[in-house]
Length: 394
Image 1 (cartoon, rainbow, N blue to C red):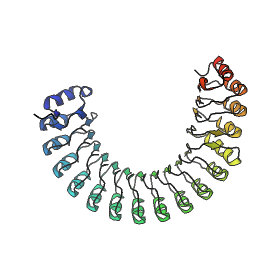
Image 2: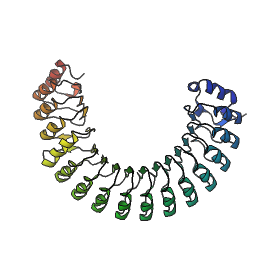
Image 3: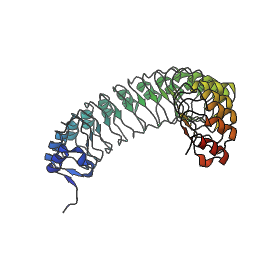
Image 4: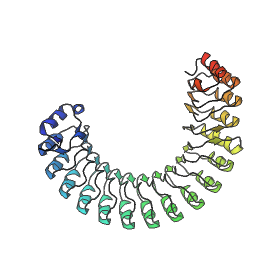
């Protein structure tokens, strides 16, 4: 007798009566009549069936009538007939488990409208890419490591977010094609990018995610400065002054969250950036004029400064003007002058990493009118007492 956990008609009927009472992911197989019952579920009811390891064509035909999300991540195979049926689903469709997709199945799924997740595919034929390029809605192909130039040309015609974050290389021709894509473009695994490819991608209209680039040439930075849309370069750990000067001209959000240090010249350049700026990985803001100017700029932006381990007095004065919660949990010490400045900040203040604090600095912070996240047990007893008596800390 099989121990397979089967979703029966009776269980499906119970699910319709109370979706929260039944965990559909538990089941490894589904009866055809149960699939028919589930197809009647309201659009807002998500069918999470990721435990299914097989699906009959009849069951797929029924599920394709459902107007809401369907999760079938446990399937490793999908017949062409089942793909055609599921393509008629009007909600999000996730098929993470598929490692292969026939050209006929791709042609069907290309007609699907909504989010389509095919993140298990490691290869894609040119014919399949041509079909999927006709898909409307978010298309996720995050396990593709390579993409032919012809496939890139086809996918560039896709309308909606395009996730190709598994690609580890990109030819200049492919980059030129993808630059024509309308919608956000995710290329988060590219470690290198030629200057020609960067120039092409800079013409892409939409947000551009290149979070694994480890280096950026001055020429590529100059190209990206002309990009229209948000630009994510969160893999960069270093940046030349010339590249910083170029990127500061970028219009839109600029995310460089892995940069730990900046030269004073680079800091001054970024202080002139007019859009949203994420430099949340910075560990140091010095008293150099460029760093002071950058701190002044950052004080006007939303951001997390929890990576800062060193903060000059002048930078503290600038950050004290920041509106909202000020996250400085990476600091282990604070000068008297910096504490006096931060004591004027309006909003919550996070200083949970402090282990060293003078009594004078504690006196300044004790006057703080907002909430301070600070661990008094890690502070010298006298400083802790001052803050505790003022109602701050533990």
